[in-house]
Image (cartoon, rainbow, N blue to C red; front, side):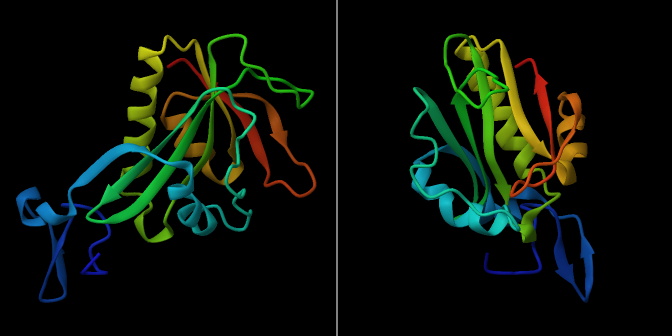
Length: 177
């Protein structure tokens, strides 16, 4: 964005070193837009937002029969992304799409834009789209460091924290769309 001091759209304006609330129309060029994008459009932000884990190269989810990718865009900058895959839960690592379960993957927000509501906007939009598709369940492996975010958005933990070599500590989480 043009002013690096402004991290959230319509959140604040700098006046004499102080921040104050500002009307949204003052930041019209920084309006938030949520939309479907190509998987490749998400890759650069995932490289930054998923650290220390590595972003999967594109196509990251070639096994999925159906998927869509959402981005939160402020001005001309991608600030948050997420992918939703038609994928039933499985403990053994085999993926299937027999039911109406969807998986949330690759949710990432640029570090300079965290806690601004962008990930919430993507999640809520994705859930609305899943309802239209008659999804019965949304699940994910939510990082332990982000579990508070998921719990605030209606997810529940299934089992204990999972710690596997080469994978960030996480919980299996799920919610109804």
